[in-house]
Amino acid sequence: MTAHSEAPTPAGQVAASPRTAPAPLGPPPPFDPELAAVLDTFPGVEVPSLEEIPAMRGTVLGNFPVPTLDELRAGGEFEIEKREVPGPAGDPDITLYLCRPADATGAIPVLYHTHGGGMILGDALTGLPQMLDEWTRDLGIGIVSVEYRLAPEHPDPAPVEDCYAGLVWTAEHAAELGFDPERIIIGGGSAGGGLAAGVALAARDRGGPALLGQLLMCPMLDDRNDTPSAVQMAGTGLWDREANHMGWTALLGERRGGPDVSPYAAPARAVDLAGLPPAFVDVGSAETFRDEDVAYASRLWACGVQTELHVWPGGFHGFDGIAPQAALSQTARTTRTEWLRRLLGE
Picture 1 (cartoon, rainbow, N blue to C red):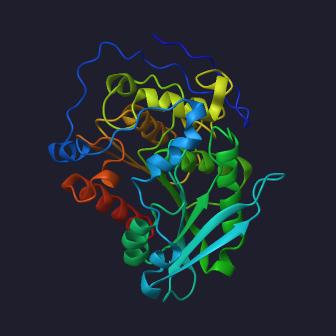
Picture 2 (cartoon, rainbow, N blue to C red):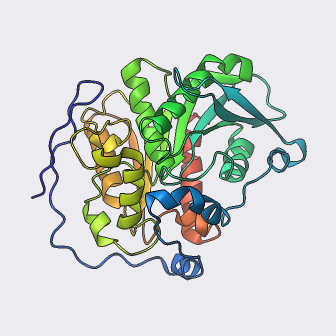
Picture 3 (spheres, one colour):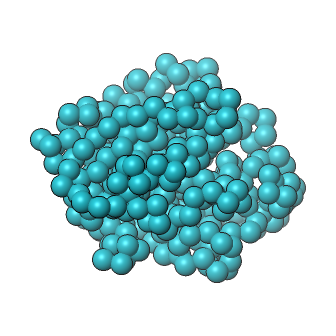
């Protein structure tokens, strides 16, 4: 058995109980053949030291072109606005990208988006074309995407508190923005999924904005990095155990894996998940986060939270972004859209 100390949280709760040690382990699940062929062509990136992270960002982001605001407007189909709003008390302002259909009338639902990138890289714009295409165009919902501060220059709690501040501002200004304050959904992928889960916990504990749902795509939830899948997938696929260790260390420093980690930073540390909004959780079977995400979904069910879980067979981390045309990617994206449609009662 691997023991973990119980940790106090800002809400006065205790961290999650010890889990079963990951032994014995078999070989890792095989990648979906169509995804594996794409992964073989994807340029590998060596895990940097903490000091190398700022310089590394440009190299990694070069694989993911950042759209301009004009490109996002798609010839006038979407209204896109960049706005600076107050950050957490005593901290710098944050940037929000506000997106809505140009022909929308009345208050529309909105998805508040927290981007991925392992807590150390990424931006609020890169994922927007897909969201505008699949959710704003098809479902008529707005998107608000937050640019939060990154680790290690800005360790915990800067990222999650930036995201929370942006959510509060969005809810308080919903009427002005043409958004329905009763239909705010939070969502993100990878680190963004972890931040979305953390902000949902904070909103519950602080009496913050009421959320209609939480869309957690392959979320990064557990700083302990010792689940069976984390060990099993070491050295395999994208964002393996070594990269995950680096990301959590950048965010938490010496607190990583110890007793003083906030559940808002690492939602797997939260004990009580009751009272959270309905959740969608998905993850690949062949990735580091598989078991922490399945465990989180199971605990949501145990605490009475309406939850939908999908484990995509042979999916590596972020497969639908790397191989968007693959059959499994198309299924995953359609499934998320259909969950949103049901959540919105359409």
